[in-house]
Image 1 (tube, rainbow, N blue to C red):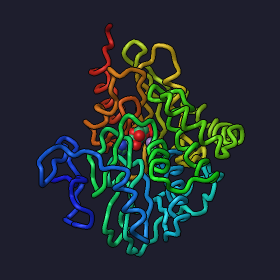
Image 2 (cartoon, protein in one colour):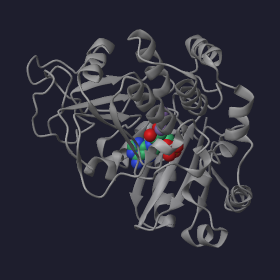
Image 3 (cartoon, protein in one colour):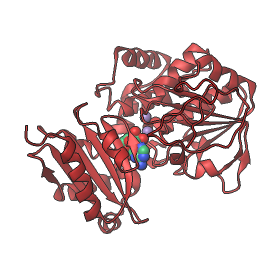
Length: 359
Ligand code: AMP
Ligand code: MN
Ligand code: MN
């Protein structure tokens, strides 16, 4: 399969395909591996066009939703016509975000836009139905921090060293003097805060704290945001945790911990998909655990697998890629066809093969 790289001039459209991750895209012209475009290139595309669709991945997290709203608000301040679409719409949990009402489910009838922007989305098909809602776009912009992102789109900026897409957007906004106000700052802060596990994960750098400080200076109320994100869960989420812990199991001498959620239990508890975000951290927090896994039975005959690692040596992105998924070295996921029991067995075996269970 052929990839789409930023070496192509803006507006030169060719048939867009989803890129094979195993074969990183080469420039059709210069035959070198794709490199990032410049912030100036993205800035020109933003300023020169009028109609935008700002998209993020399905089953969104704080980074996807915060990034989508932040960039959309900045574009709106430039007077642009902006749609903010996510297949799942705004989550209840993040509905406190500034101007959250702007983010909607995509319409069923496709619309024409000049520029489509994919944020925080490692694989193009994880844009879900939002992808189908765009009839035509002169330019596709892809801004992300997943190392497994193959570089789909015309203007590609993928920085795997960034802890959050929100951090890349902050740099873009500052560098190119795009609008930044209190509402935009709050969305960027939530994007960065959630994807760094509250500034705890190893990809959190001095620069991340500098950006956070600047966002606080622009007006973010840290206490209020933290309460909304971490101390405002519905009771059913804790009831879900209680059920998940009942299924908890350990492999590889306690190095691999997992729990699972069946459709039956989910229905009995009345949980919604967003309720389980972050619960896997309870497994990762256990002493001796290197890889944590969460299995969630889906209605379409697949199982959603979520993985977290505490060691660069146990690269969960590589494991998930074997099953058609992706993500980051320490946090990745996949959707795998099969029953809960089948998928658990296959995935746990693949993890134990990688994690040195005997040392
Ligand atoms: P999650 O476990 O759903 O929080 O996802 C962890 C990371 O893996 C995120 O960065 C996701 O973007 C990525 N990820 C999750 N599921 C998939 C998938 N099916 N395909 C590719 N990447 C995924
Ligand atoms: Mn995300
Ligand atoms: Mn992210």
